[in-house]
Length: 99
Image (cartoon, rainbow, N blue to C red; front, side, top):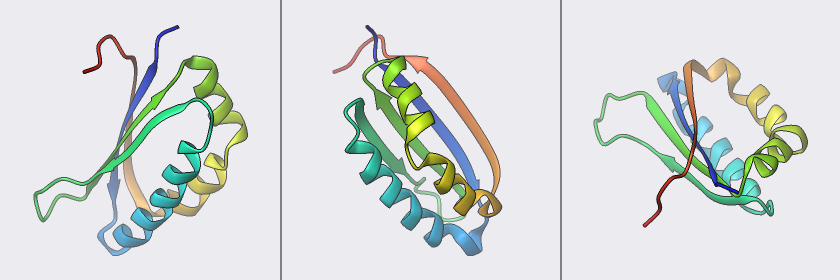
């Protein structure tokens, strides 16, 4: 089985940035408690005017990601922040090397 990686790019309305980060910190901590979550990082760009937030997630396999999508609090989390974002781009891939 190959690990699955998600790279999520979200553009956040400036007035909701801190709220969004607080919600995502909780979501990341809860996701890391799931058996199949290997990594969940929240990254903000160094540029001061950049409105984006990146999520780097790694899952043991597709079954672990599927479980997360179906059973975690993800849908409730998305409902909380959906009005705070104005763009979302998700890259789904397989981890081919890890150092």
